[in-house]
Image (tube, rainbow, N blue to C red; front, side):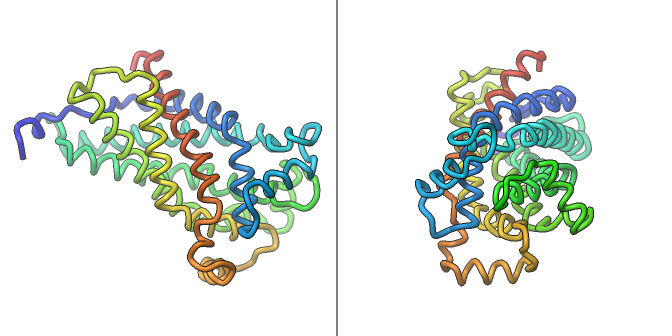
Length: 296
C-alpha cells in the first residue's frame, strides 16, 4: 500500500437527510427527461422482434394518454414521478447511511483507502438497491409494466385496483426476485463507477467541485455500464410482470431463449442505454447540485 493510498480521503460526504432531498429532486428530473425512452424500452422487451422505429410508431399511433399522438410517450408520467421521488430519495439516503455506518464501524477514527472506499461503495450500492426494491421499486415496476403493455386504455389507478383484486398484495411483488437482483447489480456498478470516475477527475483533491459536464459524464458512464451488465435481468423482470404471465423465473428464461436465443436477453438494451445513460447523468448532476445548495 502506498503512502498516497493510505491517506485517501473519503470520496463523498454522508449527510443522509440531504441526500434524501437531493435524490427526490434528481429522480423527478430524471423521469421527466427520459420517460418516453422508458416506454419504448418496455415495449421492445415484450416484443423483441420489432424495431425501435416500429415500436415508437405503435406507441404514438395508439393515442393513449393526454390527447394521444406523441403525448402518449408521456402516459403514466405522474405516477412514475411519484415513484421516482421516493425511490431515488430512499436510494441515496440508504447508500449514505450505510457507507457512514460502514466507515464508523470498521474504520473508526481513520480515513479509508481507495480500495476500502471501493468496497464500501460496492456494499452501499447493494444495500441501497435492496432497500429501494422492497420499499418502492418492485410494486411500482409491476404496475408500470402492466400499464404500458395493456391492450385497453385504463388509468394507472385502475391497473392498480385490478392487480389487488385479481392477485392480492402478493401480486404487486410478482417478478420481485428479478427486480431485486437488477436493482442490486445496478447500484453495485453505478455507485463505485461514479465515485471512481469523479475521484480520478478530481486528481486527488476530494474537496474540489467538478463542473456539471464532468458530473454528467461520470453519471452517464455509470448508467451505461450498469445497463450492459444487467440487461438480461431487466428483460426477465419485464416478462415476468406482464399481465397473464404465470411462469416462474426459470420458465421465463427458457421462453426468452426460445424466442431469440441469447440475443433476446439483451432486447431493448440500446433504448435502455439511451434511457438509463442520460437518466443517470441527470440524476448524479442534480444530486451534486442540490447537495451544493444544501451546503453538503
